[in-house]
Image (cartoon, rainbow, N blue to C red; front, side, top):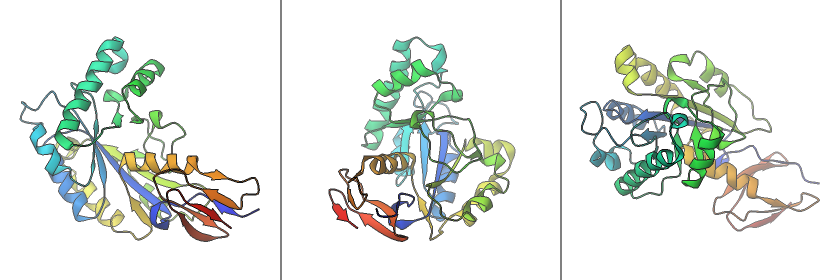
Length: 265
C-alpha cells in the first residue's frame, strides 16, 4: 500500500491564502490596488441594487476592476435571507447573479450571506440557484478547509488578525490542507482609519513561494477534485476523473496527477 497524502495545493504548494470582501463599495478600488501589488487574490461578493449611491461602485466598473479575482453573489439588495419568503430569496440571488454574469462574462457559482444570516431552508434554495459555496461571518481562528462549503466560515476578520498569519505560515506540512481565509468590508478601512492593516498584511503575506493565492471558487473546485479521485484497493493507483490537476504527496514526494490521468505507484 502506497503512502499517499492529499495535503498539497496546486503547484505542490503547502499553504493557501484567500481574501473575501463584501458589498462592492468604492473603497474596493484601493483594496484591489493593494492586493494586486503583492500578488494576493480575492473574491468580491457584490450587491447590485445600489450603484446609484455614491458610496457604491457602478456595475460597469466591475469587469475591469476585479480582473484576476472572483466576482460573487451577495444578493441584489442585501436583505436578511432568513426573513424572506422563498420566492424573494430566489429573486434576490438570481437577479444579483444575472447582473454579475452580464458584467463579468463568467458563470457565478458562489456567494456570501448578507449579515451572515442563513439556515437550512436558505441553503436548500441557494443550491437550487446554482450556488456551490457560501461564506458565513462565523470566524474559526483555524486554517481548515470546510466540511460543508455552504457553511464556509473564514479564519478571521482583518481587525482580528493578531498573530494568526505568523502561526499559519510557521505551520509544518501535515495530512490536512492548510488554508488561511481573511474577510471583511473595504469601507471599514476608511471608517476605522486603518488601511495600514491591509497594507502590512499583504506585504508580509504576498509573494510567498509556498503559498497558493486563490479565489473562493478555485478552492472549492480544487477540493472537489481531490474528493473525486479514484483509488484502487491497494492504494497503488490513482485516477483523476476531474478537469483539475491535483497535487499530493506520494512516499513523501510531491506528485501531480493531470485531468483524466491514471497514475501508478
